[in-house]
Image (cartoon, rainbow, N blue to C red; front, side, top):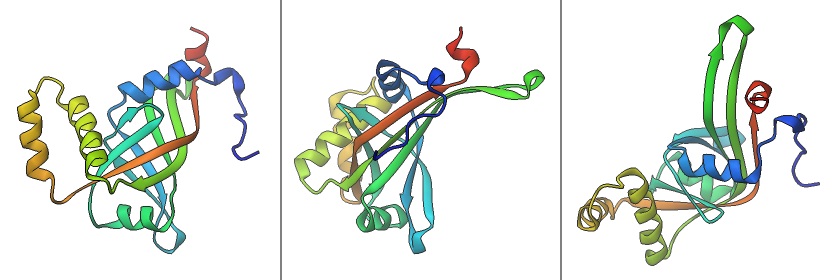
Length: 162
């Protein structure tokens, strides 16, 4: 078995609920194998499309070095985090995706990926406005694509019972 089975199966989210969270989330934490084999977890914006997660990045830095050295990654999105002090707990909902990440080298693929990201974060902007924003940042821009191998979602039992 490549991935662990979820211990508390009653709290597992359906694939549909997981996809909904991946679509509506606005940020998450990308975890990579960093320098000297230390985990490197970095908060990032993203867009989910057709089983893949796309991220933007600079062309150099810790994140890119980690991706170049090791393609495996995980990505976590917290969809709900409601503290319930009187119960000493939180009502949470989250998704964790595991997969292979790569730097998009092809210019057409890179453009398609950044356009998906731009549409998600600036949906009211015109195509011309998007093009201007993308073109301004094009030179230093790097796009990453994570192909999901396994994904799980979990929520507090209190949420799953409601």
